[in-house]
Length: 231
Image (cartoon, rainbow, N blue to C red; front, side, top):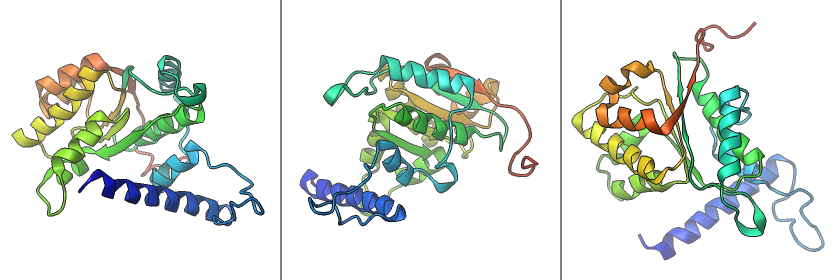
């Protein structure tokens, strides 16, 4: 597939998502003419929410270590067009805790928090299980291109590290992804159900060593909120 083919499809997808957001607000997406101006601007956070799973579209960064990470990333980014803050390099964040303690919620809250601060960024999100599935040979796909899209993304959410069954093949894929982001100092949000001390056995020494250096830690505790909802 050529670049000339991908770009129109990407543009069409963006137009479709914007149209869906406007329609949900009761705004005619075709009314953006001089006679009928669109009354409300679509923000980067609106566009992000169109990609975020519905369960996490209202996630807020309410953990003090997550909000501190947001502030650090936002303050060290480089300015883009019009002086809008962007994202360059910075620390990563490892969010660990038992099942159901809100790790993915906090990770999406961190993404939404950055966008809410006006930070201009491109981001990707995947679970490790989905990453491995996408890397298996499939007709009409380019697994290597998919891997490098994640590896080079300015911000990446890597969800459920250590949850998928491991093999030499999956360990090598994880290493390639984490090692590139480690070398390039690219901010990465990592969640895991595993105690930090057990990561070495689950993902291999090379990955665990790099995560130990590149990430700040958020350790969550408590009961499974899915089985024991508040109230």
